[in-house]
Image (cartoon, rainbow, N blue to C red; front, side, top):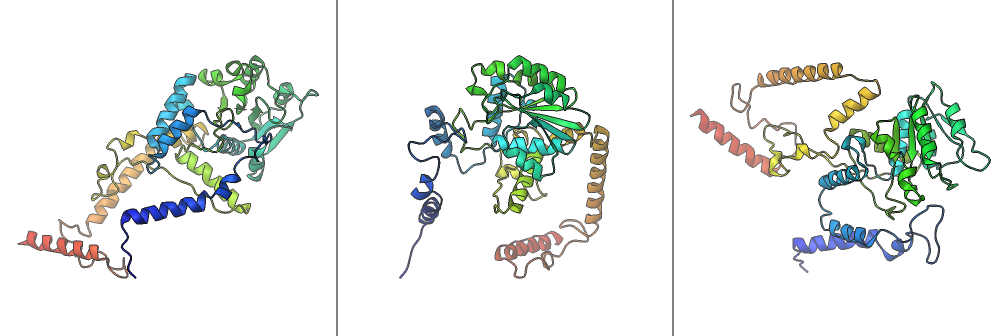
Length: 380
């Protein structure tokens, strides 16, 4: 029996098999609560995303084969425009939990974290496993957050203060101006992380939010999410740079240590130049790929982050860049002394891949033969 399969047949089979394995009816039935039940503990929006969002998502799936670099940039620009922020004020993470965990661990390495005794805790459990020292402050008798008690707990050993507003699980909302005064006062000693996952559910979202303090340059970090009122708890936005990769890698490693298995991490990469003299990335990537980093040059972002932490400086960075440039030039000069394809002592095409392959691939045999013929012709 013979089978003549076309590429279309193979792709149809691969896609059909993947969908049947990943999205079986039994699997889909397990997503969300049973019919007629609203799951209160997760605070998910039972109405789901808006029809316009679903329409846009369906259109976006048609381009699912491509990395979402421009989409990330467009999203950041849209958020910046809505809240009158600059791009430097923003970062995106795969769910606000990832951002919360990254912030807690980063600042937790520099000092203690003060927080309400009863509040949202998923990122706190993770932070404790990562060695962060938490300082819980009891709630007031009416279950509201005790801002005075938290302010009193902030001393030189504290690097961050965490406030969830509205608080989870109590649902109580702090007065906007009262929280602003708290942030301005405490922000002189430690960064204030305000988790606003439920901001849109308050009577006065803009008054309750601390985004205006970010615009003013106060020492405040505000977290927002598409998971609650926008009904997108099952959708994720990826904002990859060195800092995000570091945070998610730490998270994945800790997840594996806890016995939850491996994690697939997708890295969107950008190219600033060719890999080698024979590589022309403009043939398969946009010519302005270097300008498409959603948050700017990741090396510059990493440098600025380290300087902010007091671990680096512009002078040390300039010195390192100069040292690396000199090292590259010296290495190149040393390499060419062993010969090149055009200058003596010339490399022998028959020995170029010696000890590289156990069995030389046919296409490399062909290329080596063509190169040998060209060199022999050049010598005549």
